[in-house]
Length: 221
Ligand code: DX5
Ligand code: ZN
Image (cartoon, rainbow, N blue to C red; front, side, top):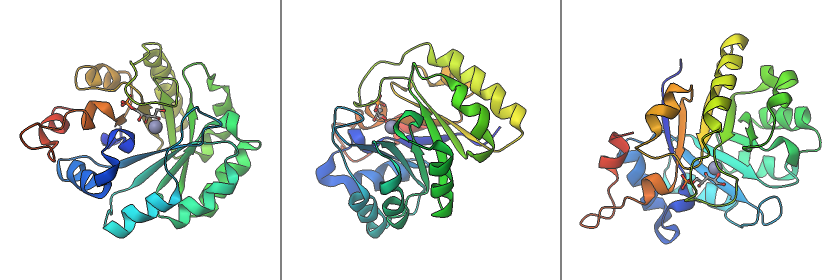
């Protein structure tokens, strides 16, 4: 299996100090930056777009940026994120009119593409496009907000997708997003995930005496 990656979700970062927060989690051992894009249409919340992604690159962030699009429609924002420095671009299949075309578009723009499955979204979409994926992201909360509790049915879904990825023989990252904390990450890893998004589980642990450091919590993951 691929090397495990820790992906702090900047949704729970201090946005007034975003560059510094990202520098600090990466210095503390995080591997990739999880970037949640919400449009107040596909999900009932509004966050950040390509300008902020570009600002992180200009700030000097060289780690992969994992753009999780919770937007509808999907296609017209893809090129802007590619130009802004996205590494991965993942989207929810039900938010795209033409899933295969969107995956192709992401690749043509030079990024790695993936599909995101909400807790109740069936995996049937994978049947025809698994050979075109670099990442599969399973939501273990309903998308829209940080700080929710992990939905346990995601564990069985992880085991199913792990089998599908292994059977495909392809290098596809299996990412989990929502309610991931130090105390449940071992169980989630055992179910087959290799890429762990954690927002409140990391940024919620600013040390009172040293608010910029996340070493302790990330090392336990
Ligand atoms: C939710 C987002 C998540 C969120 C996770 O829609 O996709 O990435 O930030 O937050 P936690 O880790 O706090 O559940
Ligand atoms: Zn996310």
